[in-house]
Image 1 (cartoon, rainbow, N blue to C red):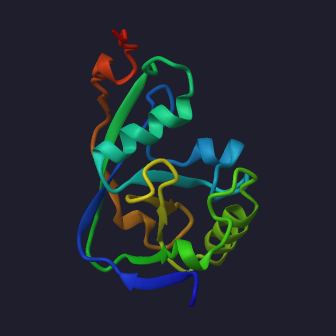
Image 2: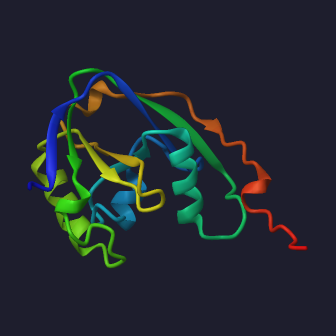
Length: 165
């Protein structure tokens, strides 16, 4: 079984939550530091298929025990006809390993080859939802658009410690 499925996407959208002190639709953070699916030097935009998925990813990566400050969200419009691939988790053993070796090797090759604009990857946080990686160097990238950044409204119950009886 191949580790990816290729497709042409119907019109859809994705959501990104990130630090509003930096551009949300540029991939600079991933280019500077790298992430699960890319090594430093590759401007990949990480998003989620749902707003709630983006929220959970943000909380998991913040790892601070409180709601992150300066967070904003954007909605990314993906028009019909944009090329995409989907990673098949069972066919890419080690994609979720903490070393990132397998996922980065796959993602780097995807980014460098420019074989699709979007890469749908499994979410380590939820295991049932997908994240959307966007290749800013792909020729179709200019067809995507993003909404104006809006502040994230956090529900404090997400991190509130409850007292046990």
